[in-house]
Length: 241
View 1 (tube, rainbow, N blue to C red):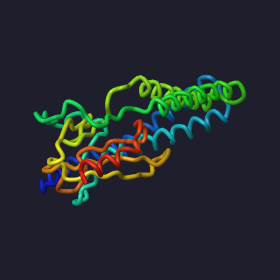
View 2 (cartoon, helix red, strand yellow; view 1 turned 90 degrees about the horizontal axis):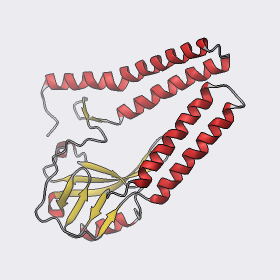
View 3 (cartoon, one colour; view 1 turned 90 degrees about the vertical axis):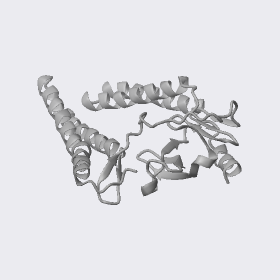
């Protein structure tokens, strides 16, 4: 249970929420802006570079705000609870009756990973092309985005570890480990509009789970980039109707 009437805990969580979600993005934006200002003056760059640098500073601040805000869960009392997306502190249960073989194992889609990798290469190439035609700051920003996509695509392409496993006995995720269907209150697939595209998540709610008092899932598995992800809903209806 995370929803308590402890005013001290509530105030402490709200303080960290305001710092990480609002203060930190502003500070990051100002810091990047100061760096851009110093670089443009040091290298005597023109007005286009200065304007581009300031715009990039604001964009980076918005990205930090979006990332940090997604890590905080709003509670009914108006406070917020910190739930990082890569939280590895969850107490995974080692079930004795975990099946030796699963009916379906879902890994990263190599096609989607390769597509991201290729997009990264194209964006980097475009950035170097723009570098020869326009200012300096904006092309380097484009190149950095391309490098990010390239690295993310490459990491996903070589990652062959399971992200989700389903069987008639239960399911397994990286965060939760194995849980039999009898220990799972419900599962559902939800679609959310992200800053790039619509994201599909498999939400898993455990019996006596950590967030049952506010009906928040104990795990959310992003299914967009999983191979054969269209089978997930069918298998869930079959194994746990």
